Amino acid sequence: MSTVANASQGLNKDLGYKAHSIGGFRFERDEYFAHIFYPGGRHLIPVDAFLRALMRDVAWGFFYGTVNFDNVFGTVNHYGTVEMFVGLFNEAYRGSNRHHVETFESKDLKKVFDEMLDDWTNEGFDPFAAPDETGLVFGPKKGNNTAAIRRQRLVADRMVGLPGDLTFRTDPQNRQLADVPTDKPGVFAEPGFENDVHAFNFFDYLSRSDVTWNPSVVSCVKDSQFCATTEEHILPITHGNDRVEWFIQATDEIIWDIDDRGTGKPRSKVVMRAGDVAAMPADIRHRGYSPKRSILIVWENNDSTLPQLYASGKVAPYPVEF
Ligand code: PHB
Ligand code: FE
Image (cartoon, rainbow, N blue to C red):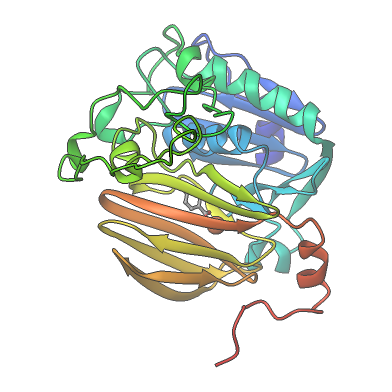
């Protein structure tokens, strides 16, 4: 029997998980793997890696540019529509014309991804948590963890800690960020401004985060978005941005694999230590490794005209000419 015939039959085990389909794609899971069936072939990804990547893709609304789950499968955001692909950014698939791409309304794909994530995430497994801080994902279906996958971002009206606004986090410091100082800044407001002037220790705040690899907007001035995040283990996606993006390593160390955005060919390794700043070009893809939990600031430019400027070559893929 040919590969294609097998693919069209799918898996014939009932482990309690549903199959999820959209367009020509069908997703099935077994004890260990997510199986992706598409016209012309099949692909599989270890289910822990798949669910961690899927969690980010839906939580970030398909993010900026390309979200590669691995070297073969992923999504490209066109801000309203989204492409789902097999082999689109893989030289070997492209070279033998074995790639496959379909375009969906973002809301339609998000609905399928949301349902699949909820259905396939077992009780005790938190796809946002570091591997050492969560239970196992493998085996037949066992309950769910809807609370973990539907986390809502906390949104302050003005600022955390101001009267009537969000209060400072009460979660404990993370076990690996217990060395982060918790002293509070002195605030000396002019009389009459006590309700408007405030400061808190942002390192202390971040050291209490219970999620990994999830940049959250902490300040937004026009299109400038500063996004802080705590990192441990591996960035669950390989990000191919459609614009330049900056990293500021605030504590500890992350090692980045930088590959060509289109082909996946390795371009460099970047080791970022506390205090290092890097501009990630618009023609690469990257994946980070954080051996110990660390704090990273991701600085994104939200200007919607940028993807076209980079794609057309009107602006260079890097911010500075040395
Ligand atoms: C990135 O792709 O730039 C990225 C994504 C998530 C993170 C950090 C960096 O937590
Ligand atoms: Fe990125």
